[in-house]
Length: 593
Image (cartoon, rainbow, N blue to C red):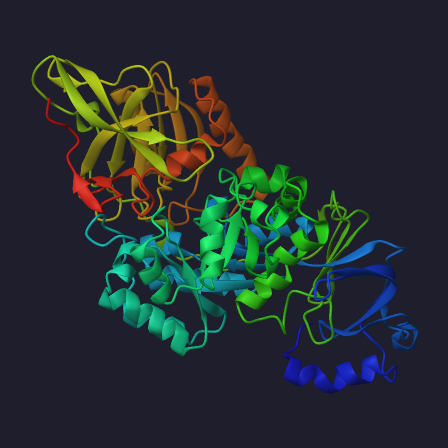
């Protein structure tokens, strides 16, 4: 069992000196040392109280009658992988379910920002996520959400987060950082609340997560950095990544289910030869299907290697770089004395098969099989009763009325495999006084679900390729998490929305008014407490349903869930209307002829 280093120091000394037995010894492995970026053969590791006590050529003196011995048999001993920026809720799983899904893939540490549930349940939602995270057999650190709402004045969240709550949470066990500061225009403009949240975090000696989702590297960027953000994961090009690192920020390169931003940035290391210390790998958003079928941080590391990165550098970016960024390099990120005994045994550094996983000195997974329990909390009724539509919706709620034969409108343009959208325009027909979608352009609606107002904001979106009479609805709608409905048929849109209202939230697909597939997400309308495999299978049903309706986008559901994310350019939808995120202002749907 893991103990604080101060309580284990004396025992670690005794084990390292060979005067006391270890709890666990791993013999005969190749030590991947991320401090020196080298592989050292014929190495043993001795573990006590969940921490590394000894790494060297012979741990034999530390083997006692009750010591567990694992034979590495020449395999590589790699530090456990760290996800430096992610959102558990994106997996549609609670922290326990997420941990159970990623442990067999070699992830032993997670830094997660629960700003999804914060937008629904406020500070109490953060506390619930933190509570379940602390129960897990791996290290799950929580970042206190900074922006709920993410863009004040442009959306209405379920429960706002205040600067006082941020300061309060900085004293909680398990809170190690401020979550991504998405209100980058506010920081750059000197917004008092945003600066106060950052100051409270820095005063507590903790890291400030960044989010500068703009290509502008001029004065606004410099003002944002001066405001105190320590990292950024919204970089999508080599130049953007380099700009962050030059200013002393950590550049977090992400490979999630739909974000493919590693290849375009890793050239800063592979081609330009820049120092990799401040480049960090992360996932940001991974849905359950990706976790079950493709992997987690092991997938990201393999991808970085496939992009031409030296395997040892890629491992550094998923271990010691991440730990150092959060000031935890003496606790995590390497196989060295005093650190948590988090490590992987693998037979190949390039393809990285995860054969054995040890977390906090315990064997937690072997050959893809989870061996540790991942305890759950008892989620309260307040978390399970969060969908409040206020009325039964009808097709008429999704009409956009106008006069004339046609209307020129703004259209949200989906960009495959990227978070940004395009601000497009289209000339659409008017039939019986209602603007109709046409071709690639279909309807989008945001249904208010926190305060039972019955309000619906309507618009248009392009890029999904839908055909026939269909609709997809989701109560996962970053970041304020109202309900997003996209469809070609208003009757199906109403049917899908009402279905989610009845079941307490989730994702569903309808065609011709009939249900095709549903993923129930009863906890805050964001998460399921079912095992990851079950959730992944249900999610795959949504993918198939979207494909059957004509969609060919990769991970189209992730694109769907971000259509209300009013802090990433260019055009989004919120409960207050259409938002031009290049200017951070509400705009009219219809343009002048």
